[in-house]
Image: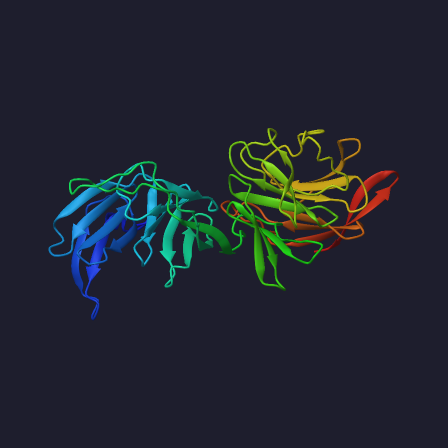
Length: 397
């Protein structure tokens, strides 16, 4: 029992309850931790119950529920063993998945490590036939399906002859032959980001999940995964040719990867400019990918975040929107703002029509603050040139 957030029953944080299966009557209730319980497991013979709370595992004797052992689990918050009893898979609070050969008592055990989740892993489970491993992310709200593959090694003769005695402790600390291959990802990052679902030239769908960008073929019902990001993917954009994608990540010093959709190979990586995450990207018609250097940078909106960005389909212009309740039109050739247009509230998304004559603006402020009456509204403007100056003419609400 328990939760990470404030609740009406804080005294239940760290408690666990044993119920009788026929009538769900309470058989035993214990509380040895002050932190919420993240995982519980019975041993194969049913004599031991393991209760995981933060970085500690409590082991209880199921005969009397009184005898217990307390063990540090460090960063491991979820684990499971296959039904054959040969492989152990663990997940930690940083999104790392490790595969061990079971049993793995020595601390020097070697393991395979995999990345994909952007935060704490809540559960790890094997399927009934041990062919797949399912992992769920607590922070990224998605489900990963990993295919278990056997790595075949040619047997090598020993360098010397060794005869074991009865006093020897045989401990196998070698790498497990089983490996995981990312097979499918269930979920889509929509709870805190927008404008991140795109189509490619071949009609495939591109979208971010956790640290991965998924290329989904709806006709063939298959997925390919771009896995070069080191932090959660927050935004992406598709080049007008529809065969090159740019994806931006979070983190203290985030990177923007520009990559080819079919082969998934990186064309360029942009680093060293942004801090604390890249939340919006758009593709320009001409882009140099030779060295990844920044050609120019300009301070845009004076307050808050920039949530909306769109590039004109035919001209060297861009439009941005953000928390300061303004739309700003930029001349990409002269590197300056040519129009500042005031809105009634913050904007979260903008888009040009295919011919570039109209601009659609989606309004919405911070949901934690007072909501404006225009939140959730889509506005349509027509871009005009009057006496040599660019103007936005209101069309429809």
